[in-house]
Image (cartoon, rainbow over all chains, first blue to last red; front, side, top):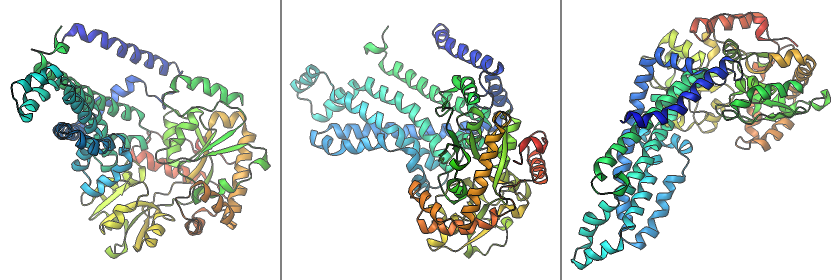
Length: 251
Length: 307
C-alpha cells in the first residue's frame, strides 16, 4: 500500500476523531450519547478477545456469503444475458433481492436455516447478490459491437463469443459489482447476527441493551474495517486481472 | 420551555445520531418504549389536558432508546425500566424516575407445558432459550445457574413462530402477553416469573431528566397526578382506552387487549398507584453492582422522586 496515497485519506479521519474527542470532553456532546474516541479505543483494547472472536465470526459469514453471491451472481447474469426473453422474464425477480428489507425477512431465515452461521451467510448472500448480477449483466451486454462483429466474422460460436469475448470484456463491471457487494455482505451478515446470534451483530445488540455505546461503536468500527478490507482485496484482484490491458488500471 | 431550547443547543452536534429533536417549547412529549398496548393503558387513559398539560405520546418499538431520548432532550418524559435508570445515571445521564406502573416485574420465561418443567432452573437444563442476554436478569440467570446446557439465542421480540414450532424452545416474555398469545394458538405454556429468582425491578417507569425536574417541578407533579388518575381509570375500566389503543396499534385484537389488561392488573395495583420505595431501589442497585452493570451504588434519593 502506497503510504503517500494513504495520507490524504487519513487526514479527515484524524481531524474528525480529534474534534469529537474535544467536543465530548468540553461537554458540547454528551458522552452517554456519543462516546469519546478515547473511550472507544479503551474498550477496543479491554474487550479485544471478545471483539476479535466476534469479528472472526462475522468475517467468516460475510466472506462466505460474498463468495456465494459472487459465483451465483455472475452465473445468473450470464444466464440472463442469453436472450432478451429470458432477461425480461427473470430480471425483475433479481431486483427482488435488492428491494427486500433484510431486517424483515431475517426471522424467516432463522426458521429455515436455524440459529448460527447458515442464517448469517444466507443474509449476507441475499443482501449482496444484486449488485453482482446487475453489474455483470451490464458488462456482458455492453461488449463493443465491433469486437462482436469480428468474432462473428471468424465464425465463433455463441459459447466462444461468451467465454472468450463478452465475459472477459465485462471484467471491469464485474469487479465494480464485487466492490459494492463486499460492503453489503458485511451489512447482511450483521443483520443476520442480530436475529441469529453470534458475531459483531450480537455484540452490538447486547451492548445496546446495556447502554454501552462505547462497545457499540467499537464493534461498528471493526465491521467497517472488515468492509474496507474486503474492498481492498477486490481492488488488488482488480489490479491483477486488469493491469495489462484495461484503461482503468493504467496510470 | 426555555430549558428544552438549551438542551436542544447542546445536542445540535449530535443531530445526525438522534431522532429529530423537537425544540417546540409547548408540547410535552412522552416517549414509550414499545408500541401502544395495555402496559401503557393508564397513560393513554390519562386526561393530561385537565391538568393543563399538552402531552403528545410517542409510540416506540424494538430498541427505542427512551432513556437516551430523555437525556438528549428529544422527549420531555419517557418510559424506561428501573435498571435502565441506574445504568444511565452512572453514565452521566441524569434521569429520575417519578412513577412506576408495574410494582412487580412482568418479565418471565415461558416454556411449553408439555415439558413439565418445575422452575426456571429446569428451563436452563436443555433446549433453546431466547432472551435478551444483555439485560441484567439474564446475566443474573447465567450467574446463578449457568447456560452450559441450554442454547441461548437472541430474543425474538414478541414473535412466537419459533416457540410454536419447537417444543424445546423457551423464551423471554411479559407474563400478561406472550403466554396468552401462545394459548390462543393452541400451545399450553408454563410461565416462570423472573421475580422468582429475586430480581424484581420496577418496570414501565415514567422518567424525566433531573434538570427538567428541578426547573419545572410543577409540570412533573402534574404529569404524575394525571398518570395516577389515568391508571386508576384504566385499572377500573380499561375497555374505552383499549379501543383507542387498538386504533393506534391494530396488530393486537381488541379482545386480546382486554385479556392482557386483566392479566396485568395485579402486578400494577398499589396504594397509591405508581409509588416507589427506597428499599426497592437500594436492593436493585446492589444487585446491579453485583452483576457489574454499575460500579457504585448511588443514593436512592437521586434515582427516584415521590411526587
